Image 1 (tube, rainbow, N blue to C red):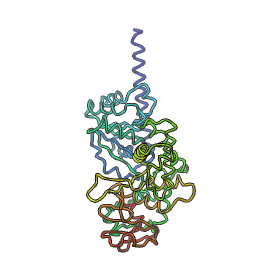
Image 2: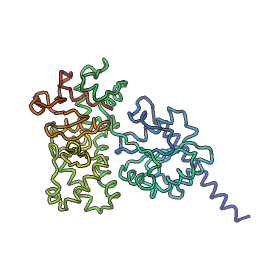
Image 3: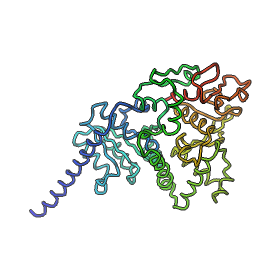
Image 4: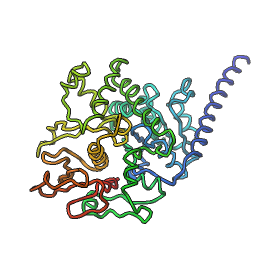
Length: 408
């Protein structure tokens, strides 16, 4: 009889720990509201068997999946777990998913998945052996999620990327509005309309450029959080993915420092390599890691009819807020304007460098500048536009910069 007692205690302990996961899940749900929902929510096919949601740290992935539970009234059929919970020191994700499915569970949400070793192999097992269980995976290390889905989960996972707040979302979130999105054609036709609550968009736009890209902009410790996003990505995510040592990881910071002080940055990988004591090939690899992690954006130039022959023309930081966070003094306004334009339009459009102006998007040529910007760069070019900051209304081929923040 004594032999069965410890087995009973062990099983009871496992059941009790499982109940704690449910308790944490219920408490987490209580912290979320559905007053404001991100643009990506409606684009996700939530009926898919396996969904992977990627995005930079702090853009709102966790909130969005919890909102889905509330908005679809699936609380009883769902379970949200964080893969870095101490529960998984003695339990596997696959065993947890199996037990949840056996208890009638329908949808399992796994957050911070990148912190669980060999996560993609166990999620693959869920897909293969628990076909009636839907799984939604999120994580803050984009590189780890890309690696896992490209390898073990290829052809299984439907992958989505959540970007930071658009200017439209920033207004909706901060002012409690419901402004719709506008297509690129609508924007260049001057059709963007604002509600009466937003009489002077330029004041809000300036605030957005400074700190509106991340949903935590309302927090008092905003800049500390923003710095943590950058540091965690450079000091943890990229080194772990690329198997870098500490000294090598420091070169990432040096490289980001160079990019952040450009106007914008035109890359010379050989020259950069000499500056940070490494070869040009390694610099190119660093750039790829940083781009996939959303720290930077590389703007390519593709000659007509040669989409596969692309060359990096300019490099921007991932969003305007990073420029303010990394600037020692006042950041260069031209860099901020171009970064905003590229960041806003690249979500729904292919953006490349223009040989005559700043950008090519969907056959349209754009030159970005302040309110004094002239037509010189686009003279003689068909379907070309001047994008001006510090103006409120469109006129002929002159489009206000802030309106491009309504594309998503």
